[in-house]
Image (cartoon, rainbow over all chains, first blue to last red; front, side, top):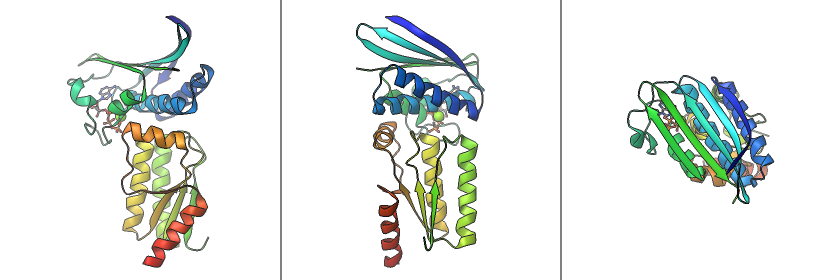
Length: 135
Length: 112
Ligand SMILES: Nc1ncnc2c1ncn2[C@@H]1O[C@H](COP(=O)(O)OP(=O)(O)OP(=O)(O)O)[C@@H](O)[C@H]1O
Ligand SMILES: [Mg+2]
């Protein structure tokens, strides 16, 4: 697998969430994802970016274009140095929230992408990495 | 437009803007004694859990104020994504476009 173009964006405010959505859309178009897949990865990015801001206290997202054999993909890595998640399994469940949300962000994001990895250490932070392939 | 209020969302909203919309709309419903609200989201290329929750809040708020809300113009790719996200928009009525949405509002107001 080859990692092509890579860029990092700060995710610290509500405005940054909008910037992330727009950057992910542009990259999804660039690698040739169809409209539905573009919409899915942008929606997942919006959920994860908001979590980074609201729960992670801000962080970054790395956007990477991937080439694997004939297929192309877009990989997003959200990282923060916030409080972390004690029980990841619970956090992934639909309807589980420690805030005022619907508790759909993490579970929903997982359903919208091809690959989903989350690592978190209480007191150290959280990393969520998702990939959408074009086939 | 008669008694209806048409709101067209034209920008990629950040969260604070979505909340402002919700507040402004509630005020307008009260001041104009609006019986029906159409929210045109045809320009939105995504609806995430936050925007979905805001639309739901607007719908329940207007119901309390004796007005009906219809969300119109959702792009098919957005609808497909919403289902997978797990957001069912409970209590929100949707229509294909503004005209259909107006028909829906008229019917339900006639029914009383
Ligand atoms: N980056 C993060 N750092 C710390 N905790 C997190 C992070 N992301 C998610 N969480 C925890 O996981 C829970 C579930 O997250 P999820 O995105 O699924 O739902 P939500 O954000 O609470 O609601 P919604 O996304 O539907 O608005 C959050 O309430 C929070 O406790
Ligand atoms: Mg969330």
